[in-house]
Structure formats: structure tokens, C-alpha cells
Length: 95
Image 1: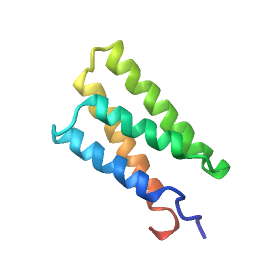
Image 2 (image 1 turned 180 degrees about the horizontal axis):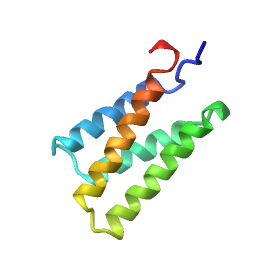
Image 3 (image 1 turned 90 degrees about the vertical axis):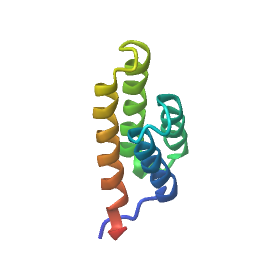
Image 4 (image 1 turned 30 degrees about the vertical axis):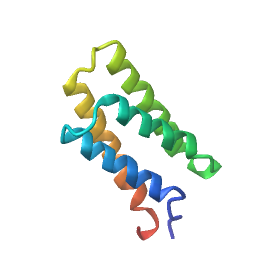
């Protein structure tokens, strides 16, 4: 049986922020802050692959923001990847 996610509330909140970004309700900075908050919350050693994903997504978002001037197509692609990973994470353990 798969282990239930340890941080479902925080993951759902980030998933909601992704939807808000895609709807134009929030900007990149708020999305970035929520991504960092979840990344910093993940402390369980068994969740290291998930934390690594979040760390890399945050780094990618920084590159898009500061090197590529917030290219909307790149942000959209990254947000889609984040949403997919969060849905996969939340689906663990039958949730």
C-alpha cells in the first residue's frame, strides 16, 4: 500500500495557487512564495524526491522570472508540471 502524502494541506494550497495563477488572479511572485513555503515545509526524509522536485521547480521559476523576463509560455509549462506532480503526490495512498 502506498504511503499517504505527509503534506496534503500544503500541497492542495499550492495546487490552488497554480489554478489562481493560470486564471490571472495572482502573479509569479505569489506563486513563487507558495512554492517556497511548501518546499520549506517538506522535512520527512521519505519525501526527499518530492522536496527535490519543489526545489528544482522553484529554481526553474527563478530562471524564468529573472533571466527570461517571466516568459508566460515558460511559466505556463512549469505550472502545468507542478500541477501534475502535486496531483500525483496527492493521489498517493488513495487520497
